[in-house]
Image (spheres, rainbow over the protein chains, first blue to last red):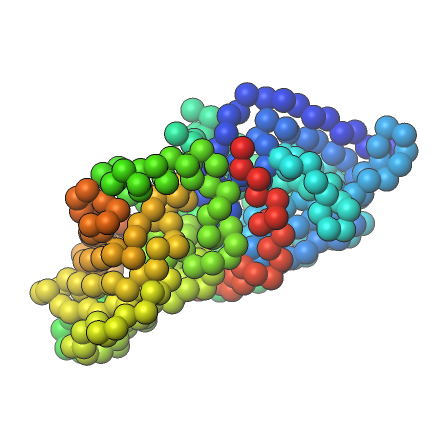
Length: 140
Length: 251
């Protein structure tokens, strides 16, 4: 089950929020109520601004591989959190907790657009922890 | 409540990673974990504020904001500004210029550190976030230009009031937001900042915002920073991979 995929969408009651760690509004782009947990293989990591991105290949219930693109924090924030561009590599088996984009539209490359809050490697190491949702300020 | 719990969870998660994930390039730009830079509030160094050769305080250093989201409450807004503020909030800030990697303006800042570089006639502020914006505080006695352009970061001149550096900034466009929720201002915005360094590790800035077109009365608040002795500001090129703007849908 190395490639075993499970996609779970949970509708919570976390309410809307505004970002502090992002250069854009978290609530305008992602839905804090549409949390997901996926298990798959890292396809590639982009250590870029304004947010690092992690693409993960996930097998759906029918065995078809779909790719998620997870927005992470900015490289400067990740770096000060203790991670580098080498902390996560293509081929790593990961479980990603995150949020789906509001508009439901894929990125230009066809991947499913989401925001990660925690990436757990197969050996239990947790990397790229944090999301612009974490320090969001409640909207008034 | 949720906010506090989230923070604790994040900090706990990062603490679990600990130094095991410590790798090559941290050091210069900040210590490796635990916790994102923006949430670290380590004890700043102690001692007297350093002085320039002329005896004035030297504000040079890398500074991290410790209360960057606070603005001392909400300014009293003129009706048009209040309506615009409500509209931006209702849209969940989807049109924030920062989301398009445009400058944040003044006095809005990012949660990331900034660096002050001081000479007798000029103080320069270099922002790590905020699309690498810079500000120049001219201390050579010049005034503002007569025909000011509409600027994203304004035109700043400075003077000393005892040990306080008083920075006067005008010449703004009306495109920037004063905070992430969309607090508006007009091209009549006038920002007066009073920089004080009471000791080695602390920077305090009393900020007065005047805007007769957008505000009913001036608004004042104080921003605080701590000195980071072992950090540098880091590169942050916002436009490198900004795929967000087309997905900022708001409600």
